[in-house]
Length: 135
Image (tube, rainbow, N blue to C red; front, side, top):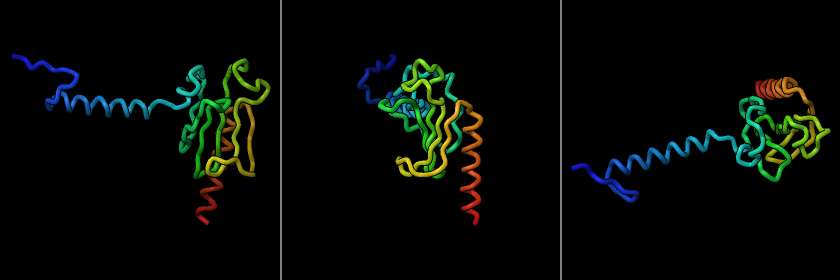
């Protein structure tokens, strides 16, 4: 006779299935980008590949998704490709600004519509930080 399993079943098979489901759900949640939760109308196909070392810190009260690297002391803002969806349609799509612990600080920044310029800017800052660290 087959065992009948219910939602509150405590058998080893169901307990392990629940743990596996929980782990799978946590992994899936980690893989989801927070910007997609806070900006559901932001087309993920238009999100460029964010450089390594940046964390998605997007918040729905911001004007667009943004990403922070504390080691580089940089913040990248990525606005909508569709200018009609932007809060400030005349502003460039990408902005990189210096930050420390979530607060904007003095330093070189970049505003552009060209993603390659953003990547080059980040690479320069990364190289400069590495050079300074090596003495």
